[in-house]
Length: 598
Image 1: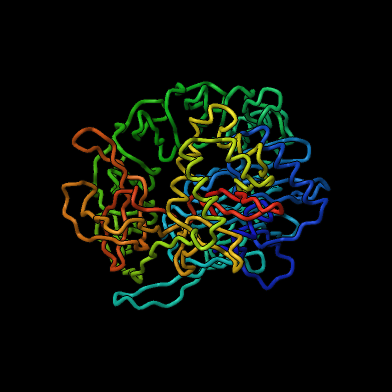
Image 2: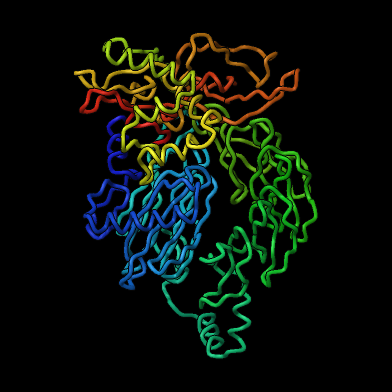
């Protein structure tokens, strides 16, 4: 873990583990690459221009190439580790959002099929739910190719996808199952091998479309098919609008943000609120919601006053705003979340399967994957569950370590730093910052950028930096070299075992932490934790105590597979904020890194 992060920091951008392949012509973009100076400059310019136009967007992946084979460079940028967006930049200055995915970013892959580049984005909703989207650059088309695979491994072979996972029987024994997803030339998407694949490039529909395209009047009618619209950004106004397949503006740029069309509706943002337009640009649903998701089965999930409900295509409230989170409808049912647990409602809002599960998914062919603690299974629409897997893990403690007193020179600096933090002494901090301090996984580095990120150049005493650095240092740390001239804090990051997934497991940072049966102080205490590594199922559960104060809980899975609830303040991720220090040439201790993420 430490070595990987150090390599990532030195290269200034995130590189995920790529897919294995035996074919030389498969482009692998997630392995660590050595870019020559020209490529590095091009990439830096693309990213810099993007960051100038889109302040505050966290870049988690970027790659540059001639993707559409027109002898000009383009760039893919993925922003946001949670609910990522994929942006496509061209050397002509065009910037489009081509994909929005709900979940946690895992990796990206670029494939090359007969000189047609495909960009694949892989995300996880929960540890057992995976979704893969593929965008064909030349066709400018995105498709979801598979979802809901547990314990998967994915690789690209012959520019197709192979997915392998463990399949469990009733006794808990497993064998390896595999699906291969191959390219359907006619449908222009990947389909599971064995499904009907169309090998013809032309049929009656194609011929009819070609005839219509030879007729100007029919082309005008086709241009009102909202499925052909793509969003674009006006460089002068920075407003979003829509173009048709031929690049003609069909809805002028006037929105702060805009999404692709779904069921003849598109979500747009105006002054920080969301509404919906039709294919002619009419505002059918006023921009008054905190968020709206795409329409499916005639309904769209919408958020208001921190609660979710559903609205119709006419803008009527179909299902009241009373859920902590929701999922799009599929086969007449939608998953909804109440106090950390997922259940299912029908399209009139009746709760047909009570909230009880740790993860969500959508019904397909009358079935859905479910998880409850360490149990995973398949449920039918009548609520019957076939449990197929029981997950446990080894109980391990990560006891606190603090080696700061093993180097008295560093110990003196460490004590002075803690005093400076208490006094919010910005000058002391600046004096002890490395000139190229790393504070993000993009290309950002340097003191000026650091001060801007943490708002230390304006109203420094109000900055959140002081709290984060104090929490980081007070957990203790370790020296990373024998000469004790490099120090990493907290010890959690330095000593976290590689056998545990840093995205799934946190560390309990106290020696007597209660695990409750329910997210309530008065609930039954089922276990006490002492610096244990613990699997986290949900980090964002909020309840109110008797005084009306908000209490944040994390739902956890214990090593034996049972589940419970812990106050979130007692858990910390190994990839939360960490600081790295070293001595410079003048013998002054400097902070080289202060960063979160992986």
